[in-house]
Length: 209
Image (cartoon, rainbow, N blue to C red):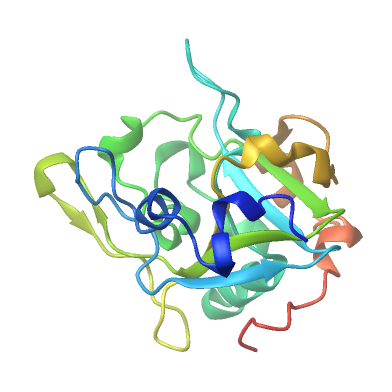
């Protein structure tokens, strides 16, 4: 039994969850999301990573937002670029890092703020959760004025993302592996590499090698 069973009656996402995972807003605009959606169960022990920025006035803290990725996916990204995590964050504060390209982050979304992606959260599930999973779709600005396609990795597909609807409701089954508001530059820029609990996390059964 997953903590968010109510979002997946009969093992399928509700309409609200599916549309949000596909990147649709309440107005019907598709800003991004997952291009080919699959429903997966994240087993107990799954390790997940998420980048976020400091919360603005009236915003919820971003550490338990909806969008995540796995350490295995991070390894695929690093292998594609032929680098380690330190190189991926070069240019982060100016919006020109490898991560910006992989995640297809439009300048219009964050106004070029140097704080974008400045924090990283890593968690380990203590109970299963349902999630939507799949490669990222192109990002679209409001009115579809501009499109940004995510970088395609070695298999020809963008990085695969994990969407957990209203994730903040399930913090009780997410054990933190990093301090609150851990610096992306400090964690990924460390010469020692990522902490072992993250770096050594196993590939999930449904993840492509």
